[in-house]
Amino acid sequence: MAQQQPLSFTDNQLLLDACTAFASSTRIFHAEPVNAQRFQGPSVDAAIRFKIDGTEFTMPVHFARALPYGIVFPEQHQYVTDQQKRPPRSPLLLASYIGPIHARKLIEMGRPFLDAAGNVFLREPEATVMVIGQPKPAIASAKNSARATTRKGLQVMFALATQPHIVNAPYRTIADVSAVALSTVNQVVDDLMERGLLATRRGGERLIPDWQRYVKEWVSLYPSRLRAKLPSARFASTAPEWWREFNFETIHGLLGGEAAADILTGSLRPAQVTIYSQASPGREFMLKARLHPDAAGDVEVVQAFWPENYAQGWPKGMAQLVHPLLIYADLLASGDGRNLEIAQNIHEQYLSAPIP
Image (cartoon, rainbow, N blue to C red; front, top):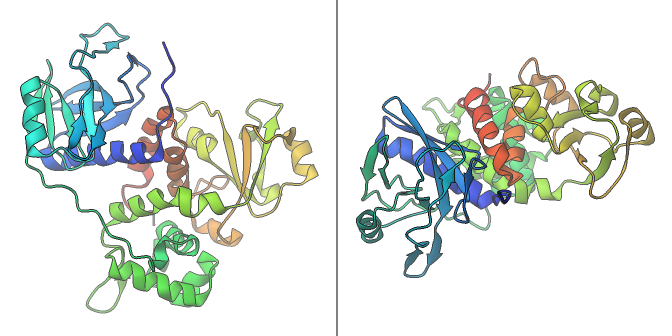
């Protein structure tokens, strides 16, 4: 069986948006991305587990390709076979939006589909679900001058998300925690207020009115607007799982990415090790960790973008780890399908609401 190709960040986000929209449009049912390795076939890009009236079943997913006049349907008889010998299923077509005309055509063809608006058609042995006519999701038109979407703006957003007690703090405090200039905080807060990511109560107290939207905004922008601009260095390791016992305080660093996700969940065998460090890795670090420089190595040391002392305000019991928000963002940005389910678990356990 050919190995599943990693998803792009855009496809990952569409998968998560569609699952959220399914729960919203049906109100009582649930959907979540899962690993697609159990399926085989050229049309399988991902997989979704549906939970409907106490019954669970998993559908293979094919991302519908968009054209100016609509979506292109794969061959009607393109079936995949579940490795667990269950009945074959037609791939679920996943798109950002499927309008009423295309929805009716797909239903007539008996083709399952789901979009990011919550339009859905499922007719499986376990359940039948049909929702059509949901309006096309509004696309936020970000202004070129949106300060919160810049590198420094994302640092401010990260500080507010990881230490929500400072949301209503003086701008100077926010600037110190974010490691940005005071004027930057002023501009970023104004931008967040204008776009509804921050709001004020009658007494003038600031708050994050829609936590999930705030998280989604930061996570979607982090890979290209902030992560890509952070200096980093790669190394190859000679000792397996050396990071489990390593004292990262000696390099002023914290563990992130897949390795941190494994420590949180115990459900992932990391292929990559990510370390966020306040200092450049030196010879002593390489000797202790038994690493050597390698541009294609499995260990990446990334420059941390927050003041070291403020990480102490993150959740207790995670002294060696970055904040769960950053672990979640790195898993999604990896484009690796095996990380999706773990990312969803971390989101449910640590990011369903702000961590006090």
